[in-house]
Image (cartoon, rainbow, N blue to C red):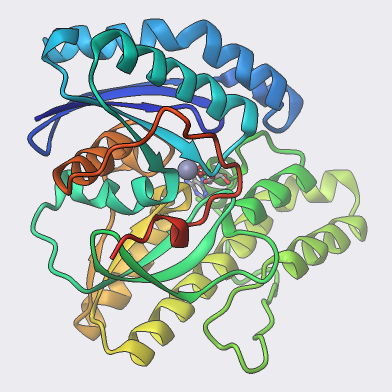
Length: 337
Ligand code: KG4
Ligand code: ZN
């Protein structure tokens, strides 16, 4: 079975081809234009998708050496994401599916992130935990099998990726903030600034990151511009460390609460090297199995959409042409046990 995957939920225009569960090709066009605005501008993003989607899809097909007539289905993200950008991908996929007379499958972007882990680790055994940690989500799920998900914890306010982005903005760094903070943190002392994240009473597994951005804002307000520049590596390292330590703390507690000893990490923040390193040390020391997707499958890409679409197709699922984009779609909405 050959599935073409399309992803346009935010600022990456991406297409990928999967054959019988194996990835043939993944093309990602990142819309760098948003960096000059300090964040994603929805209208600009939709226009960029519209301009590039055809080239991106054709390149993915060409590199995979697959003909359009050989495709069995088109998988496309229908949420969560930006209404306008989702619409571009969804309409393109619908048009292609009508033209080729093959089914299309609406894929939940978060399910895509989750199963990005399948691309390189096909030997998953269920159940496992999954930390979904992206620009809009910070959640831990228990995955009983494909399509059977139970939420263990959630953020009460900002997502971890959002904390990276907002922190970077306060420090005058570019967008997206995660890679910027990671880069500057490399030569910094993670203990120099005592940032902390509060525990949530009676919800020990949940996350809260909004106080952290206030803490760095007030720390910077007390400093001269030159001092911020001099201290930038230490500010970044201390800020990054507290986010990472919080993620690891909640992972440990979720493992203790469920007794499930394997965890997959998914979403953009999974690309953070310091996080990968500290998770590995924690896991090795406590006999926990940890899975991270390859770097290129952590941030938004169509490989994960094609893989999740392939799994859905294998389970006999296709979508109606009436399917609409759902900007606030949750992983709960994709349960089909
Ligand atoms: O999964 P993703 O590409 O898009 C969403 O679905 O949100 O995640 C984007 C988020 C951004 O907030 C970005 O700052 C963060 O992932 N991110 C990182 C790193 N690379 C991307 N955060 C920390 N360290 C990184 N290396
Ligand atoms: Zn994403």
